[in-house]
Image 1 (tube, rainbow, N blue to C red):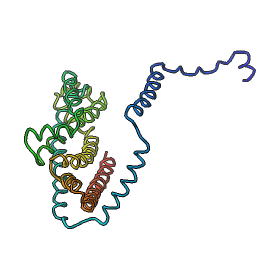
Image 2 (tube, rainbow, N blue to C red; image 1 turned 60 degrees about the horizontal axis):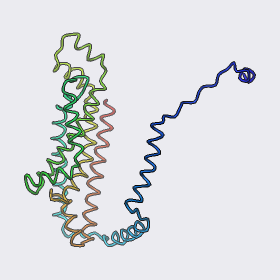
Image 3 (tube, rainbow, N blue to C red; image 1 turned 90 degrees about the horizontal axis):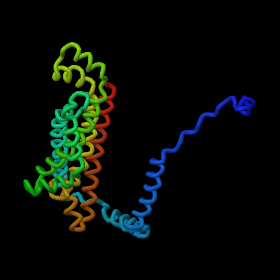
Image 4 (cartoon, rainbow, N blue to C red; image 1 turned 60 degrees about the vertical axis):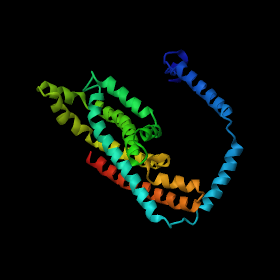
Amino acid sequence: MADLQRQGLVEYPQKPRKDPLLVGAAIFGAIFFVFCLIQLNFDYYKIFQGTLKFIASFAMMLPPNVSDWKEILLAGLVTLQVAIVGTVLAVISAFFLSFLAAENVSPRTAWFFKGLGSFLRAVPTLVWALIFIVAVGLGPFPGILAICVHAVGMLIKVFSQSIEEVDEGALEAMRATGAGWLQIMAQAVIPNVFTSFMAWSVFRLEIDIGEAVILGAVGAGGIGWEISNAMRAYEFDTVGFVALVIFIMVFSVEFFSNRLKIKIRRRG
């Protein structure tokens, strides 16, 4: 083999050529990252100082103040309610809209509903909350609307992508039998995407728990409002208890949602 290679009778595999566009994008990205560090005054000493202050503040949270435990637990329940109601409404809305956003089953309307989903998820949940607070006032209701609108934008995308991954042969077989659009959706599409829809819905609920906590700090009610008030009053021991409640709440939801997703995958 070595003799053949020396004589040029055996060709070496050619190395793949580097894409100049990718190389240029990588170089530009590295240069722009360094530029951002300089432009934004990224100060490592301030990070060090902030870390020490954070450790000192964390020490002030111990032991947690549990004197207002009833109000805080009720606020935590409100946060869970906001997240669950907003997510359920979003799942129901996105379920129907995603069929109109999938190119393989609705090519005429896919562009419009994909664009709608992109717009809804491009605006942050916090911005939606501020808009709805101006429209309907303070309380849990604007938080529900904000979570619902942003979640619809995300779920339209992932649901429609799941529909587009359905085997085209199954759709063609249904069309060949003379089945209508609704029959194809009910018998060929939904059974294939149901597991994926459930998994994405549970994942979105996990996200919305955290979103609901943040929205509470801007006037949407719930435990976020409690931690915001405690921080303003420098009641770090109360903040410690609120943080503990948030951790237990988020951990519990994530634990049960992971168990549910495991069961969904096994059934799928």
